[in-house]
Amino acid sequence: MLYIDSADRDLLAPLLATGLFAGVTTNPAILDRAGLTADDLPALATWLRERGVTRFYAQATGTTIEELRDTARQIADLGGDVVIKLVATAPALTVARELTDAGREVLITAVYHPSQALLAAAAGAQEVAPYVGRASENGRDGLALVAAIARSVPSVRILAASLRSADQVAAVAGVGAHDVTLAPSIAGDLFEDELTLAATADFEELVAAAARAAEVPS
Image 1 (cartoon, rainbow, N blue to C red):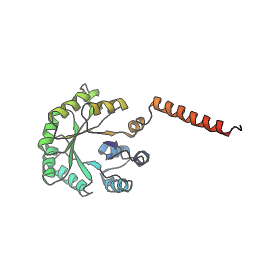
Image 2: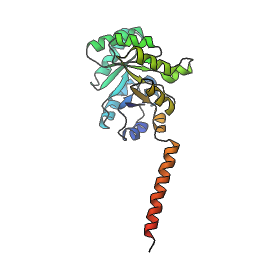
Image 3: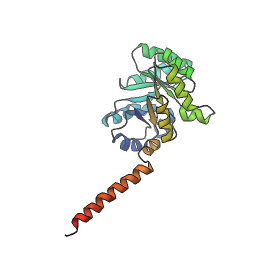
């Protein structure tokens, strides 16, 4: 499935209107870019639901178990359609285990190594988000990371994140990603293949030419 990685309403609205995206993913950096904070999550969740979104990801924050429990609880209070994201750290994985034991859906994010997906599975997390582009930019192989998780931890669903191009989107799907989350600019690029646009222009010109011919008196 396709998700949009943004909290900017102006960018989200036209993409959600296509009906092609299953939901929206956020984190503190994404909220900040949209001029929002965690305090704005309830209003954002309501706005998304009004536009048909049935799956929304929000990230718990904090460096201690207690802080993470508190912020995760606030996200859980938003509703059952909100998936709680937690970074792949020891305190966060501890809280993830508590949440999954309580029946909540959890995604472990900022995954850079297959072993972190094993930890996520041990915590009962249903999903992991490998950072594909960022891993590759830091000397690791983002595609190999997705492929390794798909092979070694088949119990978790892979939501590939940090994708830099339409080519990378197709590539991660080819090596085992179940879902992808895309910045609005990358999502827009999926609709803009130059050969497809050229073919569309050719088809429309043929239709227009036929219409012009039909208007000529015999």
